[in-house]
Length: 277
Length: 191
Image 1 (spheres, rainbow over the protein chains, first blue to last red):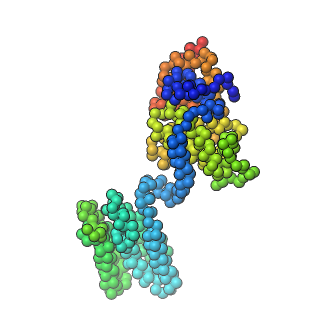
Image 2 (cartoon, rainbow over the protein chains, first blue to last red):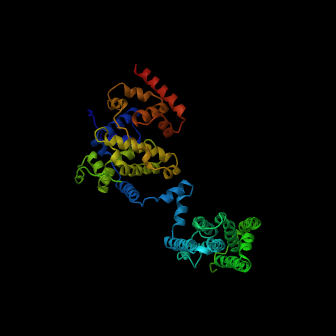
Image 3 (cartoon, rainbow over the protein chains, first blue to last red):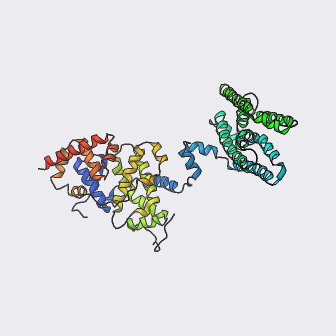
């Protein structure tokens, strides 16, 4: 494909400034596609070229997007939130491993101990609601987060960050505990019975954190739950499970959780994150 | 997911042809992509700027183009397509998707828009190569601007009517009517 004319610098300048008549612009563009020599004549701004190239270079060397992030992005989670939630990998792995280990021990004990299976199943039922609360209390603040000082100075710090982290850790903890609960022997409804108490303890902890600090709130509510369970265990086993996880109790848990959520929403500006002020 | 190499890729230099560069890019040589970028970014930018007045959008489109080339260079077929025309079809479509809004660029990967088909010069392009001398030049000049831009987008840029409508910011139906009117008018002017 050859033509009998070529571009000259004057024509190129007219093309770039838009001073040519339309048909000649079209002719120039058609010729550019066909003629490599004329393409090379178009003056390139060196600084711009370097900038553009470094952007391309950065892009092709960027770390690949993980499948989990792609899944969450599909579900509507923006990229910056994902960065925020995964910014502390050391922290994440430690509690993830801890939760997994505890749950696996519970399951293993129940599977291999023969007679006491029902007992261990019930013990699991009572201990399971505590897990998400521990996760929430460790989600933010000086004791758990080594980056806390730096995070605290950013506009993103505060209740919003606590809730984002709490939601992410609760999500994972609940998922893992559900798997463990399904693996456990015992009546089928055991697998779901601990979910509402867990919900109450989590929202309760967050609501209480508007009065005292977050770790304190978690300790108080977790302690109350454990004390209540231990006191009830003094009486007969069957009654404990029936009274603490029966329909009436579940309804009470749900209502209290709703109440705690309402308190949390009303008092969200007084959130105490355990920071020294 | 690199392809196995059939034969060793020779080192690339300033004198390598576009096809050799694309071969080296398919084999994972960043240096080849750099040469290709430096060779083609300039004229792509000049031409895209005549389509879009927003310099940031043009720059983003050019960056997207070369990222897409890096990922999909194996889809370039040396025998059927001219490298420059191939690059232009990618670039003008990247510009379109940039103009469609920033959200689009995050949600969909760039891979779905690379034309698999060979890019051969259209009949209109061949005619336009001789526009300096024929009767077509004056006829195009006398066409009203909105009709001419549509001819430009479809015949010269290789866009479909739908894509041309997006580029010009008009409805697809309007674009079809205008294109028909443009053709009728050109026929009148040329006879």
